[in-house]
Length: 557
Image (cartoon, rainbow, N blue to C red):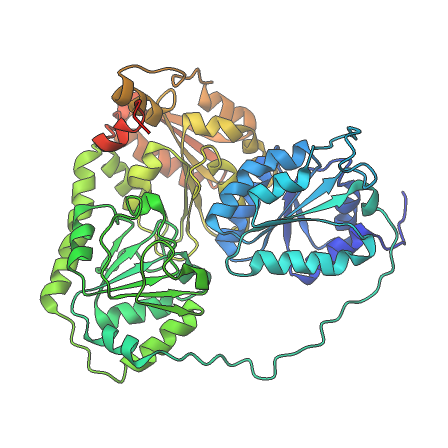
C-alpha cells in the first residue's frame, strides 16, 4: 500500500471542506478527480456517496442541502462529467440552493488550445458559468485555500446558489506547503439591531384584511416560530409559495397554503389592505406570470436587497434576516392593541376549506389517495414531488407539511430529478421517512439511481404513477393540435425492475390496493416502490386555460 505523506492541492481541498463542516460529498470517481477522492479517504471524516450519473449526484447534493440547511457538495469529472451535471445545476440555481460543485478540468497547459486533451470541453468555464451562480478556474495551485473559501462563501451568501470550481488534473496531486490561512478579524459585538420604521409597524397593527405570503426565506432563516407568533397576533390569511410549504404547519386554520392561483386567494388579495411577503421570489408559475392583484400596501421582508420591486412593487422592503426582522415586529406589536376582524378570520378559514374542496372535486380518487398518504405517513415525513401530474396538481397541495425542510420539488421544472433528490433528502434526514411522487416518464431519466438508494441504505418510498408516457404532454398536444406524437412510452415491468435493484415492490389497481400497498411500504422500512396503474385507478383530467393552449399554435409576432 502506498503511504502518502506529502501535502497536496487535493489535501488542501479536503481540509477546507472539513473546515466548512462538510459531512457528505456526492459524486462519481474519475481519473480527473481521483487525487481528491483519495484525499477524502485518507482524511476519513467525509461520507462519500457514489451516484450512477453526475446529474443524479448534483440532485442528491441539492436535496441534501435543502433538507438540512447545510452546504451541498458534489464532485464530478471533467468535460462530459461536468456537462452531465449542468442540467441539475440549473435546478439548483433556480432553487437558490447553496452548493459547491468541484470538478476536474483538463491539464492546465491544454485548456483552450484545441488539442483535444482527454475529457476536454471547448470552454468548460463558460459552460459552468451558464448553469451556476458563479464558476471559477484554479490558476495558481498554491492559492487553493483562499480559492476554496471564496467559492464556499459565495455559495452560502444571499442570494445563495451553486458555485462550480474547476481544478486542472495536473494541479490536484501537486505538492504544496501546508501553510495556514488565518482570518484574524473578529466581530466585537455580534448583536444585530433591527429597526422597524414606525409607519411599517402601524400599517401592520391597523390592517383589517392582512395577507402573509411566506416563502423559502422563512425556512432558510429558521423563522417558523416567529412567523406563527405573528400569525396568531394579526390573524392574516397565510399563503405559501411552493418552496415555502412547511414554513408554518399546514394544518393551521389560517394557512391556506400553496393555493395562490385560485379564485379564493385572488379575491382575498384584491380586497386585502396589507400584504406581507417574507422571503418570496414570486415565481411566474405561482402568480399567473405576475398578474395576481397585489395591494399597494405591500411590505416585503428579504435578505436580498434585489428583491425590492423585483416581481411586484413593494411599498417597503425590509432588508434583513427574516427571523430577526419578524422577532422585532412581534416585539413592537406586543405593545400595541391589535384587534383582528372576526368576520375576516372566518372568511379566511372558509377560503382554506374552499380551495381544498374545489381541488378535490376535480381529481376524483386522488383526493382519497392524498388522504390515505397523510393518514398513514408520520407527521415528519419528507415529501418529494417530481414533475408529474400527481405531483403538481394535488401532491404539492393536499399533502400537508408540518415542519420546515420537509417538502422538496423541482423548482426549475425539469423532469426526472425526483429519485436522486429523494435519496439526498433521506441521507440528510435519516430519522424521517422520505416519500417520492413520480411519473413513469420522468422516473426513467434517473432510474439507475435506485441502486444508489440500496447501496447507501436509504429506505425511500417511491409512489410511481404509471400512465404509459408523458401524460401532461399528451394533454397539451391533443388540446392544441388534436393529435399527438412522441409521448406514448414503452415501459419496463416496474415491479420486476425495482426488485432487481433490491427494492421491495408491488403494483396497485385501486384506491383500496393503494392503501394496503402504502401500509406495506411503511412497515417494510426498506426501499419500496408502489406502482400505481393510472388507467385502472383513474386518469386525471387536467385542464389549462384556452389562452395557454393557444400559445402553442402559429401566431403573428
